[in-house]
Length: 133
Image 1 (spheres, rainbow, N blue to C red):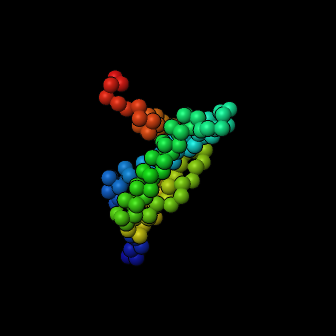
Image 2 (tube, helix red, strand yellow; image 1 turned 30 degrees about the vertical axis):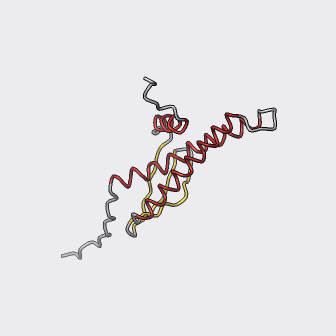
Image 3 (cartoon, rainbow, N blue to C red; image 1 turned 90 degrees about the vertical axis):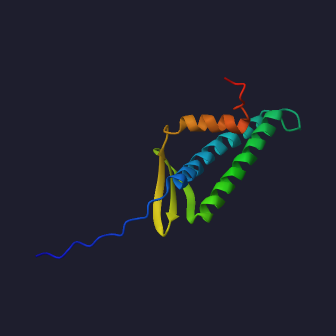
């Protein structure tokens, strides 16, 4: 009779609502980057010394997104989830996180969240009013 094979401990399942928050924490920095690029473009292509209205709108969106990222990070931390810096590569975005002592990776492939980026961009611009149907 042979000896039983050693078993690895099973990682605890991350609740779906926490995974949704982690997903948002992966997608929001992409939206943030787009607004930051837009703001730089508006600032560099504006002749007067005052901030262009487009750069001001981009800055307001940047502030709102950053506040939401901070709020998400705090909420996850309160739930015992520590999320680390993102890593982008040619395939997509990865975020490593710890949940109940277990290390996990949340990965999104490029193109898999384009619709969410469009929706969030419109949300942060204030374009999701009821009258737009």
